[in-house]
Amino acid sequence: MNILVFGAAGHMGREVAAKCEEHYAGAVLSAGVDLMLPASDKAAHLYKSPFEVTEPVDCIVDFSHHSATAVLLDYAVKKTLPVVLCTTGQTEEENGLIEKACAKIPVFRSANMSLGIALLVKTAKQVAAAMPDADIEIVETHHNRKLDAPSGTALMLARSLQEVREGSTLVCGRNGMAKREKNDIGISSVRVGNVVGIHEVIIGTASQTITLKHEAHSRALFAEGALCAAEFLCGKKPGLYNMNSMIEKM
Image (cartoon, rainbow, N blue to C red; front, side):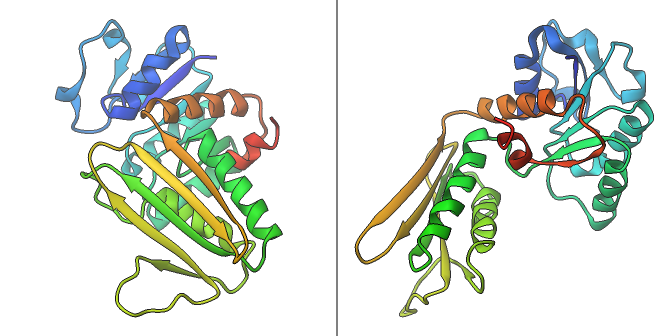
């Protein structure tokens, strides 16, 4: 399986390229980042456009920027290549392009490429469904440089739990004299040091509490998940796939 990496100069693009080893088909630069390229023996396989790629490609892994969506999908559709789409923040127009592409090629899309997070989501939903009267709280911890709060993963967890909690409301942070309502799903954010990412789901009643926790030790886990997704996607029919599609086959 030969992987073409979109977003060669970013942190995650480098991680994916490093883990591809002999399955590395090349990498496409994100716009304007040429000067950030690391010196490596893979430099000969760097391209400014996917249409310049000469090596055989079996799948594309995208960790670039949502603004590259149109070029990426144009290439993938013309070459009938599966795409693992790891970027977020797509516009309405870009989301439309993804929907159209899914009719012609297999596309794997997830806001978080961690297998562990996917399993956390699945398990948390099972517990929440089995304990319909339990309170649910989510606590996410990240490094002190992270801009968004709550994290996208915490929101993904919360929205997945809403699927088994009809009428529930997301409450991001608490202060003052606000009492917890029965249907609240609380999300708390902690920013400290150099933490890569910790997500906890706390599901509790008056008599017992279940705490589910996932801790990321390095960004490498997202690259590992992306490559697992690429292997899963090869040979699939056109359509939209996600982490649930993959773990259901495990």
